[in-house]
Image (tube, rainbow, N blue to C red; front, side, top):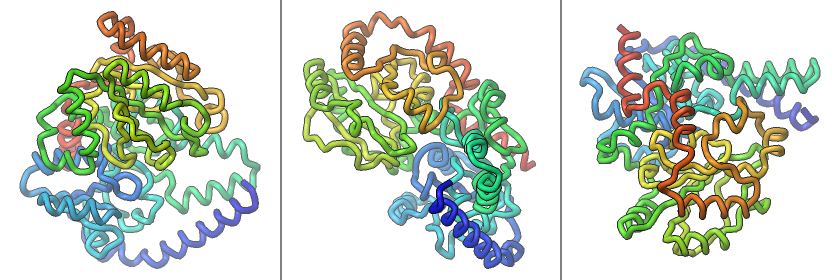
Length: 417
């Protein structure tokens, strides 16, 4: 921690203490309704990932006596959900605060809501963490503990106080895991959860149960311009490659540091009748060079890519959890970890040996990547990585069947009973 970091931490602690004092009396003014569940969107309430897809399932299948409300800080999301007949409230509006105070169960898929002031309105409710993927890199308490080891006693004490008062790592009633392997080796250590359920991830249901894609709610926050181009290209007999790198803590992108040359990639894509789809992490929004090439599609970074994954023939990734989800489709993956030494030393250490959890060919340079892409396209019927993909998929997913939301609902309802 530098002087500026110490000052910011002190200010944040004061603000949190003031907020708790201001909101404390309200916690006891409203009785919790066990048949009312709140689902809070990712980060500022984006309609993506497990919170979105579980909410869509609830809207379709939950019994009439249950009430479900999606809470977001994005007015456009709220308006669109209202148009489709879904219950949604804008935070920090009055309606959202009343809903949060009354909810018996609150469901999230990341910890950002707790750090943005929601937790003061949730005390006494059941907290369910869906999380947003099986990580390859360190997350949550792993990161926090590593940070404390690097700090001295005083700075470590201040960092611990800051984390406690900002609800950085709240006590969870239930955490959803994709497998017993991930529960044992990852989630039991990096979350403060009373109970962990191996039910799987709701966002993967649309990969394995295509009928879910027909529901209008699933279409919300999908980049439809990109989808139209992808579907048109597939109908014309072309193939689709998705490049989906994870974000770096320093917000570098592969386009900043020479990891990707889009002009060369576009030429190879055009020669092979391939559509290159780029999906950056939302934290890297605006870091992709603009192009008007017919062989390249840029997906809106804050949109939901999962309803589009079934159209992808080849995924290229690095340390992102999306490659685990893509294994459910049993299609080739190329791993482009050109900055692995820098990433693991300055961004996030990895949880596992990289090669053991990445079932696909590896490229360390952009030239190697282009060669591997061409080789994979030319030998699509000679898939030498299929057994490795199956091995990793069986470790990561106990239930690769498209019914994760149904299992989560059944488990939570049983616990309620």
